Image 1 (cartoon, rainbow over the protein chains, first blue to last red):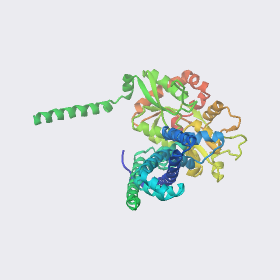
Image 2: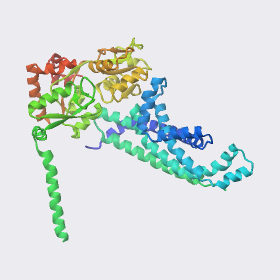
Image 3: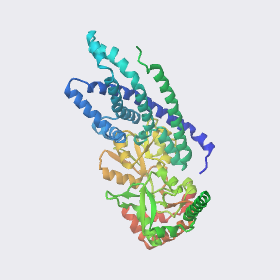
Image 4: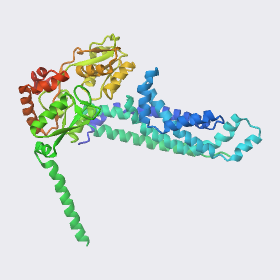
Length: 219
Length: 281
C-alpha cells in the first residue's frame, strides 16, 4: 500500500464532480427538511384531532424506519404506481422527508419554549393567528433552534453516501467507481474522508456565524 | 519492579511479533487451506455464474467448479461471500478472499493484477432492452452515438468498461448495484439498456417473466470472454495446483457435466487458454 500523488491528481476532477453532487444534495435536502419539519410541527399542533394524529403517526413512521429503506422505496417501488423520479430528486426527497421528521421535533421544542404569557399577550393585543405566529411566536422560537437544526444538517451531509444505493453519482459513488477500475481504494477513500472533513469544518464555521448573527432574540 | 515489567512486556511483544509473523510466513497456502478445511471465495450472486439460494446455499457454475477442484485438492468446502465486481480484486489483494470465482472475465489489466487459473466459463455480452428495441441498439457504439441513451452495468464489471471504451460518456453509464435493480430500471425506463453476459441476462429475464423486455445477444463487436478462478499474486503455487486438477476435470468430462446444466459451453473454455485471453486486447 503506497500513496500515489500522481493517481490523486488524476482522479481529482472526477472526485470534484462527486463533491458537487454531494453539496447539491445536502443543500436541497436541508432546505426541504427545514420546510417539511415546520409543516409537520405546525400540523401536529392543529386543533383538529384527525389532522394532528395522522400527521403525528406519519412522522413517527418515517422517523422510525431507516433512511436506506425509504430511499429504496422511493426509487424502486414508487415507479410501480407511476411516480418516476430521477435519482437525485428521489434522493433529495428521501433526505428531506427523513430529516424533516427530526427537524419537526426541533421546531416543536422551540415553539413549546415560548412562554405561555406571549400567547396570552398576543391574544390580548387582538392579534390574529397568522400575526401571532409570524410576529410573536416564530421570531422567538427560531433563534434557539439554530444550533440543533445545524446539527441535523451536518448529520445529513454525512449521510449522503447512502444515495449511492440509488445510483446517484455523489462523492462516495465516484470514489467506488474509481476504485473499481483501478483496484486501489486507499487514495479515493482517503480523499472522500478529507473532502467530508473539510466541508464539515467549513460549514461549522458558517453555522457558528449564523448563530452569532441571528441566534439572539431581539428584544 | 519496573524492570521486571519492562522485561515481561518486551517478552510479550516479542511473542506477539513472532506469532504475527508465523501466520503469513507459512509458504504453502494450500496446506493452510487444508488445515483450515475451507477456502474463502468471492462471488457476485449473478446466476448462472454464481447464485445464492434462499436458504443460503451457494451454487452457480463458477463456485461448483471451484468446490469440486478444491475437494480434489483436499480442501473440504468453500465459504462464499458476496461482493461487488469492483471490490473483488482489491478484496483478494487485501487477503479477504482466497480466490475469486465469480465470472470475473480475463482481461489484460486484470491479468496484471491477479493470477488467473486456466479458463472456466465463457460467455458473450448481451443487452436487455424494452420490447422491440426502441432505440435500435446492436452494439455499445450505438449507445455511444445516441446522445440521450443510458446503459446500466455492474460497477467494475466488464460491461461497464466495454461501454466506456466504446465512447459512452461516464454520466450515461449508470452503475447498477445488482441484476434485479438493473431489470427494474429498464422496466421503469430509467435506463435504455442493461448489459450483462448472455446467460446472466437470460436467467434474469426468465425469472422476471416480463413480455415487455427483449434481449439483444450477442452484442456486436464485443468478444467472447472467459473467466478463471482468480488468485492473489504470490499464490501461484496454489493456482498451479488448481490448474492441474481443473485440467483433469476437463479431460474426464466431469467439467462439462458441472457447467453444461447451467448453459455454459465446456468446449469454449477448453478451446482457449489463459495465455491467449490475457494477451487479447
